[in-house]
Length: 146
Image (tube, rainbow, N blue to C red; front, side, top):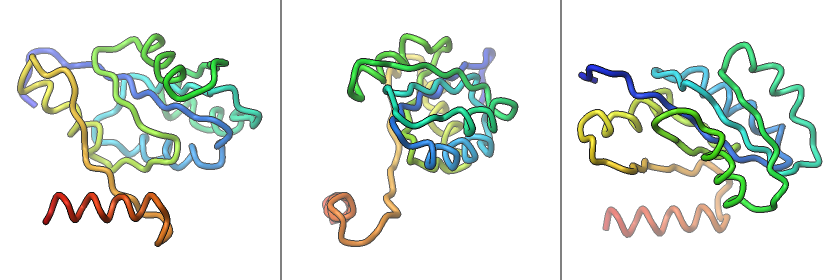
């Protein structure tokens, strides 16, 4: 990435009642080839406590955590945007496992073209067979490849 100035990044994660899943995401974020400047976690008024998992990763990740009491992903993502302090905002979900070069690859286009406003990446589902989500990804893959 040839640039005179390093672009800064905020990774926003929305979560609700899934502390048992978010640790795997945090572990994947510690393995990124490009470290995020901050990880903004927005808890959408969970009934479950995230204290243990947040405390386990606070020394390994630049975590900032917030609670959004307005229900729904849009309100929680908007809160994440409001709380983000850096130039590029990336979104991922609490049940995702980003590949090690995810953040690096998502930021690359911004170095190539200063007019880019948004980028997206490939999503692969590794869940149980026969689910609605898996059928969607299979149909989508066939449409793209076919």
